[in-house]
Image (tube, rainbow, N blue to C red):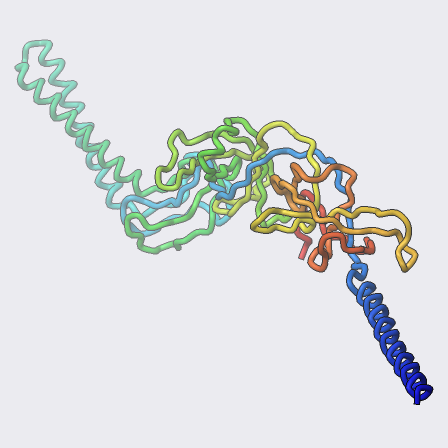
Length: 377
């Protein structure tokens, strides 16, 4: 009986030992597998933080307008009798553009001129007779009054005839004709637009805080979406002496040359105004920054030395808070948090956390152009 009990206890002990050993072995394997799955290397692209020249600038939007521009019309009604321009012509100051029928007005002018001429003859004759004491001073005074009245009526009628003629008030480029020969025009009807295309003004608004960095003569770079990637250079020519009390913005005007007439009044424009001296700042692609309510961060790639299980450099990503500055194109200036030479994750941050192993693949890089251009369509 004792022998049987000993054999049974030994058997139970062996079975329990096997079960316990299997559980320990299984837990070890599971732990090892979970450890290998906890931080699998993540593939990211990287960029080396570098210093670059940074020109502080203020951006604005505005509209182009002509130095002189007007929609031409006549202040009197009438029927168009003559058109002396073609759509798209360049005209000079004072050039006749259009005439209204003025036969009656011209005839009346001739009659008034004849009356004035007769009044002049009467005055000249009575002046000689007054010298000979043949007429009274009252007669001569009456002749003077009559002559001046007739001459004033001639001038008034000449003004009426002149109002039937449309002349270019300044030199410029004529637009598309809006009237036809023989058409009756009411007073104020638009005939054509006239725009002086060189130079042009660019009017824009900036917050009052920008006034500390602005002055007349500063260089302005203008872009319009009609010509993607092309810059037009001008200078600030005027700053409004009053800030708009409702928006706290101030109006500014830049003047830019337009010799080839490529720019037209009314175009929407974006403007960049250089403010202050150039600076050397660490720059990164904007895709490298993770913007968060609690602070902006980047991932810095750190080499821990040695090789990983795949035989590649043992690299990890460490999250770092940074202070960002202004942006330009695809780039952002980093004021604090990293230094030139740091290797920064530029794409793939969404799958990272602190101290996670990473693999670098820079075959595809995000855009990092300070002055990106829109590709031609």
